[in-house]
Every structure is written in structure tokens, then in C-alpha cells.
Image 1 (tube, one colour):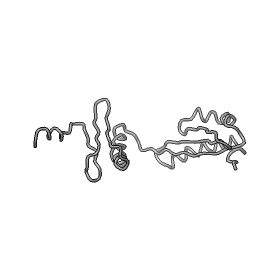
Image 2 (cartoon, rainbow, N blue to C red):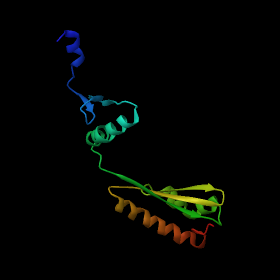
Image 3 (cartoon, one colour):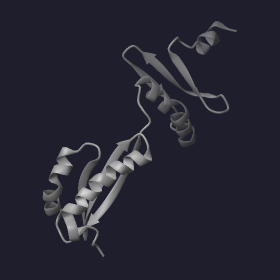
Image 4 (cartoon, rainbow, N blue to C red):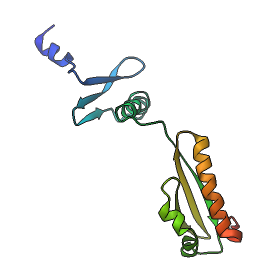
Length: 147
């Protein structure tokens, strides 16, 4: 093998090639003491495969992240403006982080979005359900009465 080809084939100690199912190396991860560089192609099928099979598992392992699910539910309310609804659920919007609560005004209704992060769908749904019930109790007749 010619020396210039040998240099091209060299893989440094903390470099990990990312391969497709056909064993083609299409990306790489280079680790440094203060971080990593991840390089993958922008072609959607190849990028999606490498993200799911290599990059996301690498990031979870490197930063000791647990599997997480993000789930949300949207409630619709009408008969009250966004500011009136905001006053009734202000503490839920400001005080909660998981699940988080936010409002969005639209023509004809107000949307209240409840978003939860959890380890599985059931846990996320339980978090959402508790806040949803509190919002329904506070809004009463105005909740989900949009045509």
C-alpha cells in the first residue's frame, strides 16, 4: 500500500466511523476531552438511518441520558379570551415545568397545550391528565365548548 493511501485509511484513537447496514462508512464521530464532533451526510435516508442507529444512541450513552418520550395534549376553549384564560391558569403556566402549559389564540378558540416529558407514554399521559383535570375544573363550562 502506498504511504499516501495508508494515511487516508488511518483512523485515530477516538474516531468512530458510522456505517450503514451495507457497512459503508458514511459519517464519523471524533471524541475530544471537552466534547465531540459528529459528521453525517445530509441525504435524508442515510442521515435518518445514521441518526437512529448511531448518533442518538451515542449521545444517550455519552451524556448518560435516559430514553424519553415527549407527549402533548391540546385543549380547546372558547367563550373567554386568551388573557382571561391565562389569568385562571397563570400559576400552571408559570409554575410548572413538567408538564408545561401554554396558550395559543386562534380565530374562534383558544388552544391550551400541555406537554410532558417522561420515560414512557403511560407516565407522560399521567402527568398530562393531572394538569388537564385541574384546567377543566378551573375553566368549567368554557372548556371544549367550541363549535
